[in-house]
Structure formats: structure tokens, C-alpha cells
Length: 75
Ligand code: FES
Image (tube, rainbow, N blue to C red; front, side, top):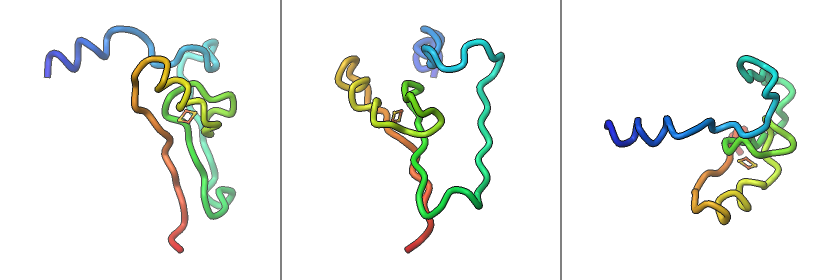
């Protein structure tokens, strides 16, 4: 457990999104999501909090494996 905690202290996970805010919080109304919404979890999307596919470049550049959170209605 200590090793995992040490790695997390290495630096911020958010490199540039709304750095002037003390905490980045987004609220999305469920009624406005439609059938599917794709949310960014890599903190590099230009459409944050939505995914724009930038996680692919991030993963290649640094060997990471992050991807989006997909919220969808059942078929
Ligand atoms: Fe961040 Fe897709 S751009 S998860």
C-alpha cells in the first residue's frame, strides 16, 4: 500500500484544466445526458469534463492506460 501512496504523491494529475480554481467540480444534469455521455478521466481533454480522445496520445506518450467513463442508458 505504501508504494501506491508514494507514487500518487509524485505530482498533480491535473496539468492545466481550470488551475485558477481551488477545486475542479462539474455538475451535469442527468436529463441532459441523452443516451450516452463520455467523461474524461485523464485530465487532458480540451472538452473537459467530456472526453475528446486525447487520452490515446497521453497513453502512448507516457505508457499509461487511462480511458474515459462512459455513462449510457440501457438498450
Ligand atoms: Fe481524457 Fe479521453 S480525453 S479520458
